[in-house]
Length: 253
Length: 147
Image (cartoon, rainbow over all chains, first blue to last red; front, side):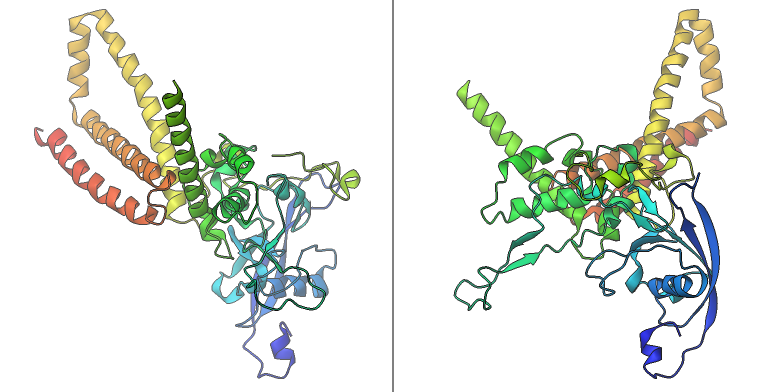
């Protein structure tokens, strides 16, 4: 059986076979190649479940990342038929008879479908906080033992926006949508964080100004962060800062 | 981008950088134009680049054509004879399309990219397409109308 629901005794679903062409690469390989697997799928089977089936039934050496299985962690980000998706929430039935599965683009492959996320995180400014103070009401009671409430940002850091961005291909130095969206988030709502250095970091030819307003990052984002809109807003802030700075210099002269 | 190996756990074991998957047709320069599953913004960007490359090509072609003036009025008159045939006038319509697309999309990118109308990029593209189509049809009938 292909998913947990079926195993819990629900009526079995119609099974059909889909061919998965899966990207393969192991350390020491001269170049990547593609392996084809025929996988039985039901109407609710996800890409992740199909890949797990391949891993368990056909090839135990297939490497893939996963964690939460409900689109919260971002670890199972892949390209399926060329499109960036989270494998855990992508239904196979919406795809064609032949399904191509590749790792995300623009990030080095470690093995098979697993990429080296260090290059993704290296694009962020150095002060990148993984956790922020939450909006928890000040007069509300804190949980026992917790001095303050923190929460993750909306961005699940899956790297899909970086993969979808056509501009990253044209410049390796471009920091990319996720890092810029993060910067705008902090600028918009600093909560005591230093924003001057962050704006200076973003005000760079390989920062906010490299974006070509293509909006593929927003289309790919599974977490509704809307990176492109945030980059545009960041540019508006940077433009205002530049104009104010020029006016101040003119007034001084 | 910072050096990803800086202070990262496991950095010693990962000195060899794995292959980086790129979009496109297998060649690095085509990575910016991958038609699979793309949205309007990616098509608009690809068309903007292609028309931009076309306009650069035309600029040099135009400068090259102008050098016929160095060979006198007779050479220029002979060129004008070629330039007013139907094929050349058809290419003028293609040139007008390139100019209109690149210019109007440029205005759209400028308006969106400076934070003025960040949530209207699709509507702006369609507005530009409508304006461009009207001007292109008008221009084409002007170029070809006398034939």
